[in-house]
Length: 256
Ligand code: HEC
Ligand code: HEC
Image 1: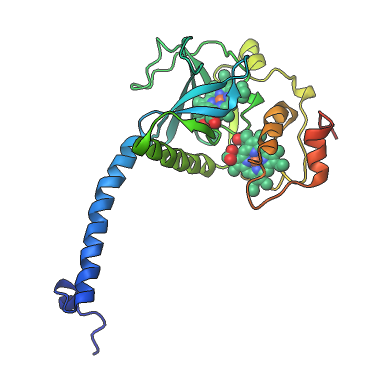
Image 2: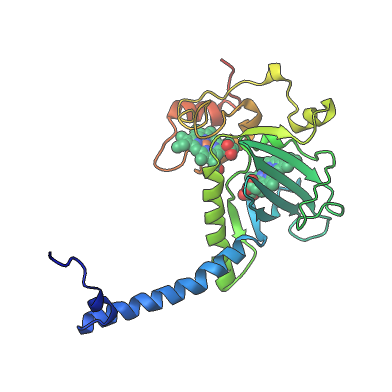
């Protein structure tokens, strides 16, 4: 029988080229051995960035610090949010993803503990559903708060975390409590006032049974923002001129 693989030639390379290839492979493995653990460590530490989308009332971009705590069946995404000059106490927000459901929390930053996972909810200070339609959102930093090598690690981490966020697929969104007041601040519009943003260019993905939950008029402002910055629809998809006019031009998308 013909030998397919000669093990001895792998163990002791004879030609110079083979020796060089083995050496390069070894160097590659060692480099990976250093980078992968460093990256994984980075992944479980908070990353700080100036948000492109979130602004304070003076129109200054907010500073966000995001921490991802993955679990076997339950992931928790934390975000501290504050002004860039650190002049005010930071808000602490969380989204818990479990069983295809995303639960939104505004947390007491002093009583909650991100290390033990203790979540102490307080009333929402913003309507989560006005910007989130499908649990965690991809992070779009205007700028990361770091320099040199650390900034590169931050950007890489953001890219990896964004892949994680996209892989959840369609999620159901829930407030942390079911009382009327909490539900009303989670999404202020009454169910009868909510209608789907049925734009042809978007429903390929944002639809029942699609990869993202349907968009409604509640997310109109953020949809407009993402389209005007060119973030949505993602490349190579394009928005039709009719949909663009409906979303950006008339100021309001009509119910159908
Ligand atoms: C004005 C729009 C807006 C509102 C309102 C809003 N978010 Fe977000 N949120 C964002 C954006 C945009 C991101 C992605 C980070 C970035 O690029 O700034 C984000 C990110 C997050 C993250 C980090 C994980 C992720 O999704 O990337 C958490 C946690 C979070 N939001 C929780 C909440 C909760 C809880 C509420 C309601 C109290 C809320 N958010 C309200 C826009 C908003
Ligand atoms: C090819 C699929 C695809 C198309 C087409 C698409 N989107 Fe998205 N959209 C996504 C994905 C994936 C995300 C989550 C990750 C991100 O933010 O990039 C997202 C996120 C969003 C969000 C943030 C809320 C959320 O679901 O997390 C808005 C708002 C949005 N898209 C608006 C639009 C609009 C408006 C259109 C049409 C003009 C559109 N998208 C077309 C895939 C798509």
